[in-house]
Length: 331
Ligand code: KG4
Ligand code: ZN
Image 1 (cartoon, rainbow, N blue to C red):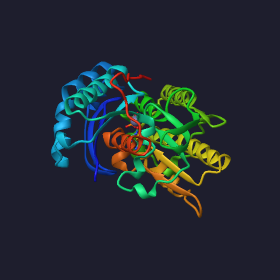
Image 2 (spheres, rainbow, N blue to C red):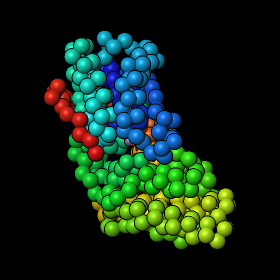
Image 3 (cartoon, helix red, strand yellow):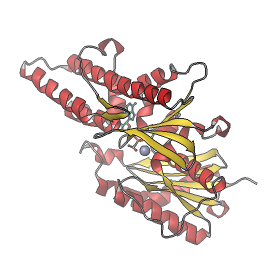
Image 4 (spheres, protein in one colour):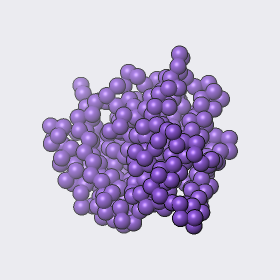
């Protein structure tokens, strides 16, 4: 018997619903309020919450239609309940609770960061083997884990200040490049410019720090502007040098953890994993005995398919479910 899982994701600016047939994605509908945040250069929680409230029912109907599965056919409802923006999480969680009561179907709360770690295995469950080194690089988090099971996930290292994606966004804002900064800097990156400026990224053991490099980029811009030398080409050289050192520092940390914990599998998810240079570099680390799994482009950012995926495993394999008392846990 196949099982149909509905996933619901509202932790940040994406309102997303997905339906899985076992571990196969039938639909994954995401509506982002990104455009509404653009003029502020960052996510405004109030705007995100209101957008979730306005859109969640429409997104659910679209996901059900695309999958060809009526709500009555659902067997399980999986929802992100942590971490994220408080108000935004509450919208999705309460929506999931209401559906669970109305449809008389179980529901389960999922840790959004853990869900990112299983993105590469959606549609390909046979590839999944424990243990693995899990890496989440997103707008809100830069974390590394030892993953021994669906519910045995231990943090090994993280950023001590800004997250990696957040740093891309803040630098892009300071350089008037637009929002979100990650994809823009990704496009501007030119390999031949990678060493034009010598920036440094903070690393303490397996922890990282990005606030220093962010400040260095902002000061460098001011310094060059004073000499009237700031132009599009210099900008491109600066952001290329930044991207290179930021991503190479992350890669070095991942490889260090891999050796330290004798991991043979590296699994990466989160919005920044969409970066072309990062993907190429990580893929090049796949060697005899070392496997690298990257979230496919469509499942790297925030989406409900990853939430449904982990919920399906936790419920089916680990026998977990949540009670109506489950609370949202903000960042
Ligand atoms: O996982 P995600 O969609 O949302 C969070 O949970 O944060 O990640 C969004 C982040 C943003 O900071 C965005 O700038 C970054 O991912 N990002 C990228 C790229 N695409 C998105 N960073 C670098 N290169 C990219 N191509
Ligand atoms: Zn995320």
